[in-house]
Image 1 (cartoon, rainbow, N blue to C red):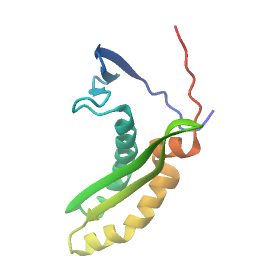
Image 2 (image 1 turned 120 degrees about the vertical axis):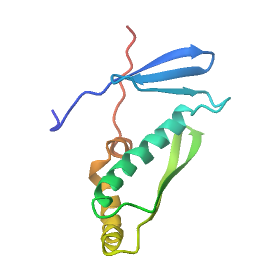
Image 3 (image 1 turned 45 degrees about the vertical axis):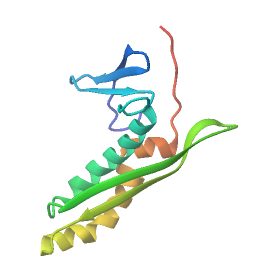
Length: 141
């Protein structure tokens, strides 16, 4: 068993044709759908999870030095269908952060490349799961 292991659960409910909600055990809820309306699609939620996970890592590591003046993370990917099925390729995470022109801001800027590398290589559970590849078991009860 992996060290630091802790079980996670979310539950999806159908609320209408092509519309769903997902809830966590803490009572949080997100609506999503097929892309016909403004709700996020599952693919967009995956990209959001990648960006969100690494954003949290970067924020924790850099804001210890200085509060950012600007913090934006964009996640892009191409959705393809080929012999391997539907999937995303060329996932890219772009960081646009600005820190104040202070000594603490300089420290945060200097730390940023290492923080991005650490998040990508070790810390971000979502990104690591996608890159390493984790089998998904489907069960019908």
